[in-house]
Image (cartoon, rainbow, N blue to C red; front, side, top):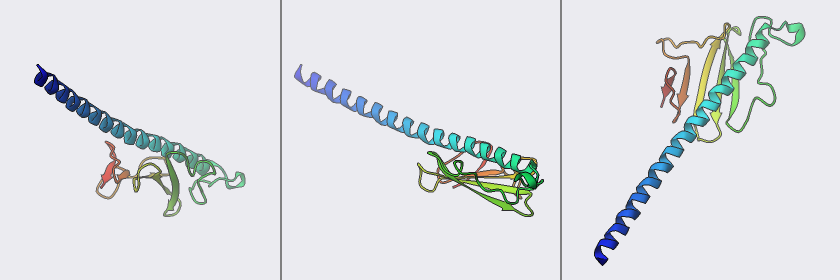
Length: 144
């Protein structure tokens, strides 16, 4: 009887250990996904701010039909999710937003928009945004 009880205790400890391990893995995966999704929403909000800037006349502090001169407004350049930078491409007809995660070292998301706020595809027709170093998202290209 004593050997059966010890065997049951050992099996119980192994099962609990496996359950805890699986739970930690699921939480870690959810945390990365939640951070990625929050950054994507921040990029979308920032792109809308840039779009509004584009439509404002220069006399009102806007771009008069261009993204030229747009800077990330204070308060939108950094939050608990990431830091955000913008690059104006060409003649101000495209804007690239780069977000670098604060939670995952080296994880970045990049999105390039045209004047109509459409994601710009690469030369090979892929995506329009990229996820690097651990961020993956269906519909956008992942460079790992």
